[in-house]
Image 1 (cartoon, rainbow, N blue to C red):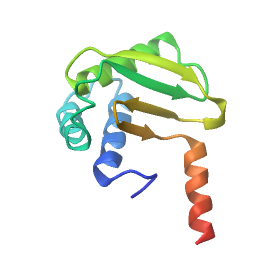
Image 2 (image 1 turned 135 degrees about the vertical axis):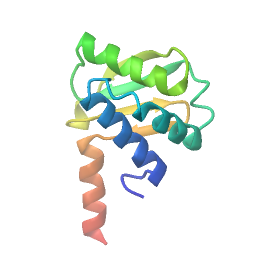
Image 3 (image 1 turned 90 degrees about the vertical axis):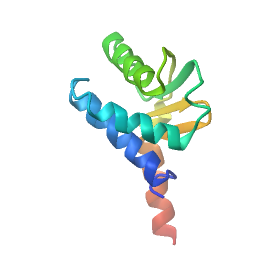
Length: 118
């Protein structure tokens, strides 16, 4: 498991990253992401709120794009409850029901420290 995530969880993160890099234009990725999310958590597909922590404030445009992507993935409209957590250093954490994606630098630094301590 990389970053404490399963292979499906990691593929999910990579899919969202690719979708965002393409500016939401590569819709062929969405079905793959939806399938992976279904594998990870059926509860996440019922949730109405995505809790997002970022190291710095997202712009209105970034927040709306993230809301659209996540809503598309779960198959219904989601609202975003965002907060700033400077201890993340960079990256973000997304929590939808019991499904958590943590792409923060702080988690990557912690993982590297654990690897070095082995």
